[in-house]
Length: 374
Image (tube, rainbow, N blue to C red; front, side):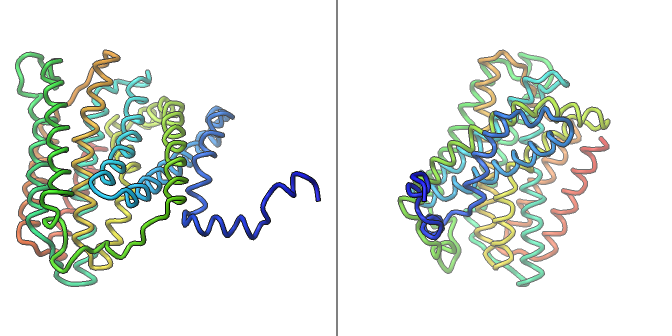
């Protein structure tokens, strides 16, 4: 046996260490693979290289969110919620800014399209699917109404202030805020999100728990070693995502525009990518008759998307002097108003059935179609 072999622990010991860490092997492998992809410039090796780099980017995003959830579970509330939200925001902002800096097309509205896509995916796609699946499997499902009402109230205020009001201000024409107005909206968005997190995790935590107790109380607390490895890997994953997003941004925009699709499709892709892990978690919770967990995940993601992403993108746009169009078109304002109105009604009784789920999914289908064929 060589010195190098003797220096390494036996294979069964290494497997035992991985088992004690209780982290899926792929979540540990993807972030270093992402950095290796950047170092080797895999995305420059033709179509196959671009596809491979895109797959690695997806894997790094999923790994980052997984490790953020592990850290969040360990540190507890309210810091756990902030860890997960900040990690997701870093991913989303890096993707948006990378595309805004590219020269493939006018990307000034990309942040708006991504945030709007996230709201529509959550309010209609995720919640609709959860209500439909939960209704099919369990009939009528119940949840605590006060928490959902608080989330919808905050979401409606944030959505209108960031995506509708810019069209009607007079200082700057078009769907733009003046610099002072943009700073004000960024501060207000961050403030409202912070107050919501405080209410959810400290002041009125019982509003966001099911009537029969905490649905997630059964989850085992990760060890310190697991949390430490997850945090370190999370940092590597975030660096890999930012670098890969910057490298692939122009290719993505050129592909969308080359296919004759509106640039808003890019926003849908970014939002779907960032929301994929939480969407899966919400679906699984609804299938297990835990609709309260599904709604907490979905509405919390929507609030973080506006409350953290808009201020971050606003700061970047002001620092780099990038145009930032936030106001929605008339058609999208109608879809936003319809989505908020239907969500308020369908979630306004504390009980859900398959009918509400079907209505949400129909609105989501119309949104996707009108995005491709405006």
